Image (cartoon, rainbow over all chains, first blue to last red; front, top):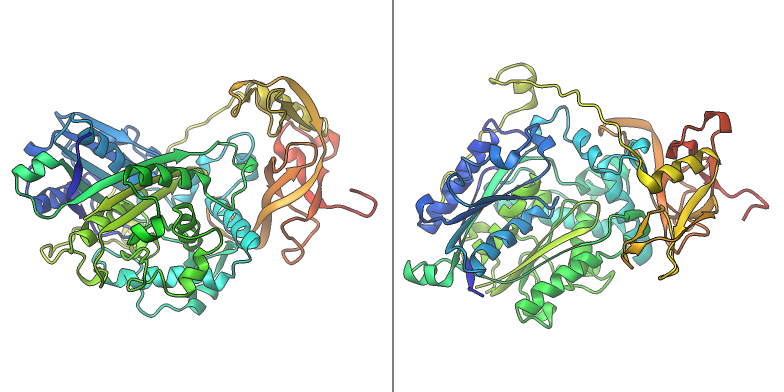
Length: 387
Length: 173
């Protein structure tokens, strides 16, 4: 298998509404990623586009719609979609294009424009539920998070204030992110605990916002990196993905087994047998604050029920022993679903190449893991990257 | 991000910019309608709801009693074998107290909703439904509940034939 490195990344601002079309956002992110890698569209062999349900943009054939902005025309081009998991999965698809030897350079472009759906993208989220079993109950997407969070809190006796610490950490971390939508240097645990109750136990500040935005990364073979003398690169050392059964009301929601399976696959590939010692920092998917904790346990970076304790003890702060979401995550930077690749894969690249600026982890880091999550509480995608 | 990048693209708009027509825009109101065939397993399930009963499918290989019922066992990857009735009592596995309706609009009276695992099915197998005859302060994980059915004449073959799950009354178990 060919060794693959990330050699460039780009992203747009993440905002509740952006003037640019999805195509224009893709162009901006793609151009930034190509420029930062020091290559042109002509160097790109294959292109992967990651984007969530067509209904958000109200445009069917969304992969085709975003094609020109993604630089994919007259090239092998594929759109991938694995729910919220797309934020990391599209990079895995780009990786196998290069790892297989089929391409020297693969470009991955992710986009979401959630503001087009009026008055709120929630009305489209309702269509992910089973039409016979669930939809007559008029469900709201926040319910699945509320039910999973409640199960997690109840089984392990987790306090809400320990979960709120995640929102505080990530919104504060996002202060150093030039694209951030909801950075807040002064936010406190009390602010989160006093925010509006949406669907208990979920409160307003437990949730990441819907956003518009795009991100892009460039992957290249070791050969290409050597020949072009590219200095800023981070190696993709392990990948894994897994999905659990669709019968979600038959599963215990307390532990994301599918994330653990994806992580074990990625760790084996990366020759990691003791993740807590061998991984220096993590970018788990944090659309809700408890999800970061849930995913740290799924990633085997915390024992079951232990992630809130690590958070309370400061282990996951940017200057802690295991920094988690140093980017500011979805809670701080925003949640344009697939485009969160900018914080998950992009941040790993920027941190591992020392380019993260104000967000740079103060101590030396060699290995990071990123993870995304999606569908009906059932999908996990994991990428391990090394300096 | 990198010291090398100085311009981060994107022009932010406010909601008012759109609603007041301050930006050039175009609108589209889709009006798609759908009708789903309920399929083999769900058709029987819905018919039985109309009869005021829950039905499951058994798999003779793994010996699970599968609920919601399905025509194939996803674990054994073989067709399931028999229909079997299960009880309309169960246990709350998890729940939420929702102040959001389906469009994320705020509502004053919260909806109690969650997952109930049903007695007679394999452990933890259940469905999402509403909870009633209890307050947001009473509801808890592990609570024993029973389906409150609509009167037979009002049942339509829908999960809404159950109004909600309510706490067990004295003498019920």
